[in-house]
Image (cartoon, rainbow, N blue to C red):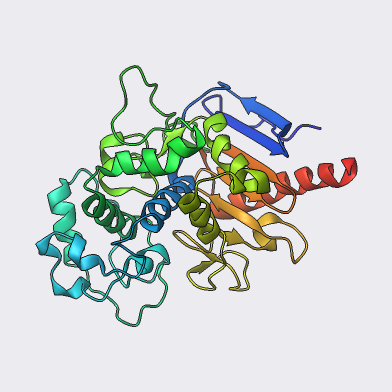
Length: 334
């Protein structure tokens, strides 16, 4: 059984899917270059959240309930006084502005965010950019370390993963351009997706890049009970937060039981998986249809990366079809 079908895809499209269970590779298929570097987009979210939680849970002078105002430039002013770090991690900061910064300077972007009204009712509000960016400022000032170093040291290196963030390293291949399904050309609405300088400035939770094998290093460990137990204490606790349903934010299962949030609450319900009720797993997806999954019950990890933009409903249906075929295979061999 094969999972990928490249017959109807533009020639500019690359995809790869890897499925591992208990240390065994069940599927490893690709279209285009096998070792291509992809823009991870929103698949970056659980990794950046994991890095943030790993750092914060290892501190004695900074907690998840600490107010963010003490870590922000003075330009942000008193309107941010009531926001806690945990609010940034659960879509409950109340920051109302969220937009692509374009080629603004970071100073201008900060001024724009600082002018955002803060909704004190704290209704969970999904934010792709600004919440992540404010969190990256907090982490930088709390650690005295650049955000790219925080991501690498607390998110990539503990798993032995070689992912990119920020400026390209000497000799590092750039990520594949994001392609439009209808034209087979670059997707104009995602012109920033392979621009490292923009991603570093404003997309701390959507700006990583890497190969499927490197991403699998992280989620293979998360899916394994033995792998999680072997992690250092703060990182093991961070994984626990990541997999904790919180009941707020943007519901992904249609029943508002599980939230697609910045950090903990990353469990997604059965509808996201295309499974019968009661099956849940840690999962994140992106605008290209790429997704990652850690099913701790089956100790199975899935990494699917693509550079092709799909409509949200099409991405959902494709993910369900892939997962249904994977689970059907597992049910058959078991």
